[in-house]
Length: 160
Image 1: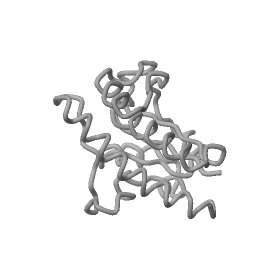
Image 2: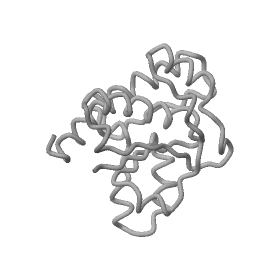
Image 3: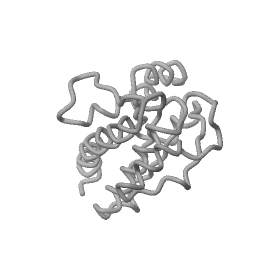
Image 4: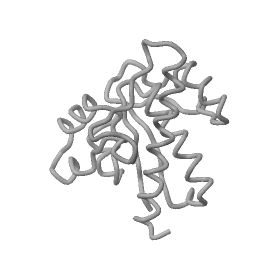
């Protein structure tokens, strides 16, 4: 079993997008019973809210339904629940590192785009919140590439 949590700031745009994309890929790969996927935010502004309507609309156009998801806060206890904690940007990596109880927890933190073979080192998932609809499509593109790389990593880890 591999447990993955995607983390952004408010858990209403980037991290639920990554969660939805990864759920889809894992189901297609027949690994849904071996991979646990969740998302959370490091900020508490949107707790309990569904993903941003623009996020949901962009995802729906690609056949992904995110309306059942609700924003939640990542806590220090989550480090014990997840094998990989995948941040969308360096700011969230820093937030997570401050929260991590020890070195083992910090070792679980990575940038999501580190799994994208086409991305340069340190590449981030851009935050679409204050931009136009094209930003949400870009986030989907970025998450799809990174999650495909993550799926390859998961398969190798599971020996699948």
